[in-house]
Length: 191
Image (cartoon, rainbow, N blue to C red; front, side, top):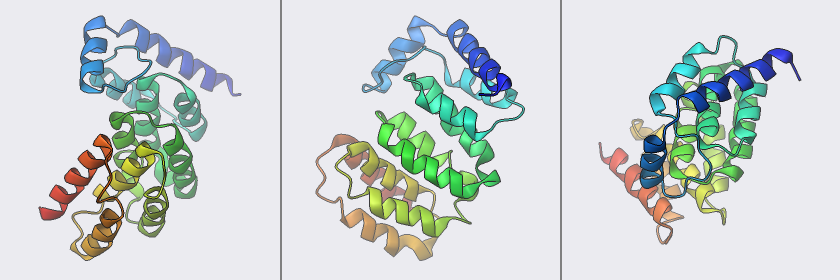
């Protein structure tokens, strides 16, 4: 492992620990009930960290994602969005792999929206294929992820039918977070 990567990870964790608070932790747990381990750092802190990382790379993204901490998964998603154009194919492999480890709506939505935003046009076909595959998953977070990926395409009226066809596959889904994603996607399609 590169020394600079180890330095980046340790520096990131030092910042997260120093900028955490019990109040933020409690608030996050209330807003994201399925959150597991967390530092208690605000979103603003995470955004500042992303800006400070001069040479982000896929190794850093993967190391952060492997963490059990909420903030590190959010950082991995945002950093991936910053570098996804460097290797769109690797980005798609990572989001599909990462989708297996999602455990809350915030990480799910950050990865599905910010993690790929810069490649949605050039990788539209592949993103729809991932959505079509994951919508059949037994894992509720993968189904939600499949839907949230499609939010990136709701402004394209030519894709409305294609999105609606995927929505039909989960119309009877009973999972709360999947139902919320269905509502969100339907509302985006109306606008």
